[in-house]
Length: 167
Image (cartoon, rainbow, N blue to C red; front, side):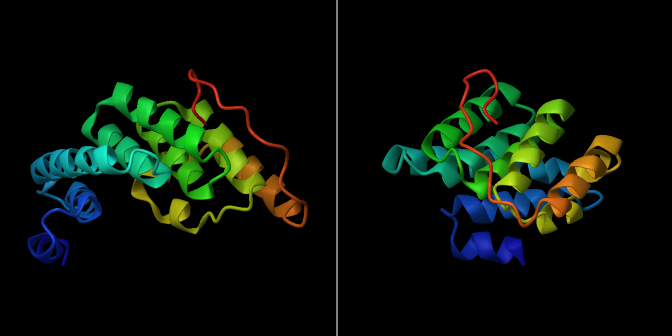
């Protein structure tokens, strides 16, 4: 389905990113995922020249870079996305994913905690194969339980954005 989508809209970075994700989790297709992520990165970079203030574009780029093993660029894109939209739950979900992929579990858990505090949904996180290890961490369960207990509470104060820890 994603292959057909990119044939119809070959310049759509999100389509290429979705294709890369599907290849990544399909046995025997991991080599194809690398090429698809590179295409998604190339198209997203072009789009960022036109629309440099799109935090969702930057957070998508962060995911593509992380899945490609380029952690330096992944973290730089997360920093940019957080500067542009410090309270955006979509960006925070990407923070959880990118930090977990890059082996930065403590940062992933901090981003998860903030995501919950800001009222973000955990649905897609619970089903993402890249987060299966995170969900087994006892700290994950504590954060989730605390979030469920405080679900009626308003979100906490604003998050200070740091260049060293984008989330």
